Image (cartoon, rainbow, N blue to C red; front, side):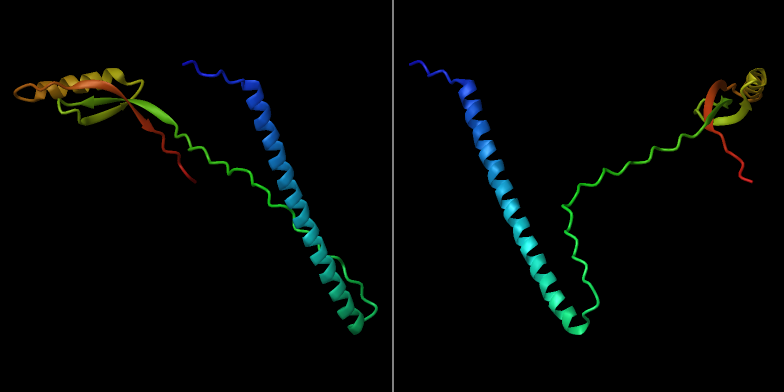
Length: 142
């Protein structure tokens, strides 16, 4: 048996009409609440005026301010992580990937010579190699 085809436009119109009615009801409730608050404020002001008139007739009472509707605050901005400056140095490593010595970047030849000297000094000879290493620059605080 064939199923009846739904008219999407009619369904959408019905949904929007229901939404409008819902919003109108909410607005009516908000207006009623505001009117009740205004009435309460007026009653409070009248009561205060009567009290003030009894105590001192010269002073005027300032009306209380309405409370503003709660506003959604801006989302807090998270701080970006401080970027640490890095520098490249040449590291001389043994076969266990342990850094044996470090040399400044322009001194690559000295690093390679040091690696060769360490390899020749060991019996049996062990491999040493040179590799660039990035390390943070330590800024001097004065």
